[in-house]
Length: 116
Image 1: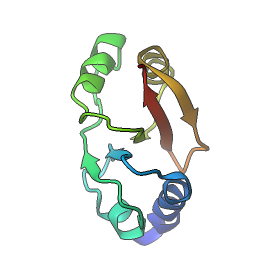
Image 2 (image 1 turned 90 degrees about the vertical axis):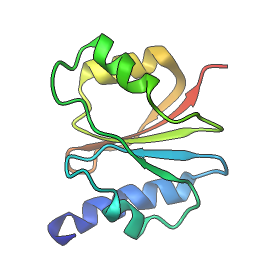
Image 3 (image 1 turned 45 degrees about the horizontal axis):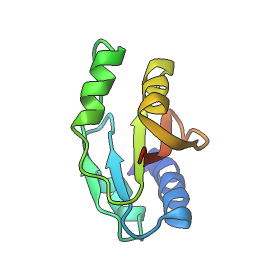
Image 4 (image 1 turned 60 degrees about the vertical axis):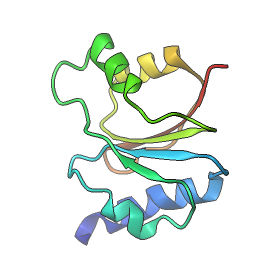
């Protein structure tokens, strides 16, 4: 985990502190592995690996990306590298109660609740 250990530890500590039963974590890492988060995460929320959007970060591609997320029982944590304005705007449109946490390095952490 090298020099990024503090980054992953901070992400996991944030999620661990506020995780609730039924939460799901979507880990969209540049490195393509959820091992760092699995190492530091002590909660019960399952972690799903999801490839980030590499090209054409536009509304249609973000909506498509969101439509392939696992079913949400409660709340959804999204750990995403470099979330830009378009990505965040589409999430705000699709979900309510979006909480954005401080960035950990270049990783954004979002906690979202689906619209009812």
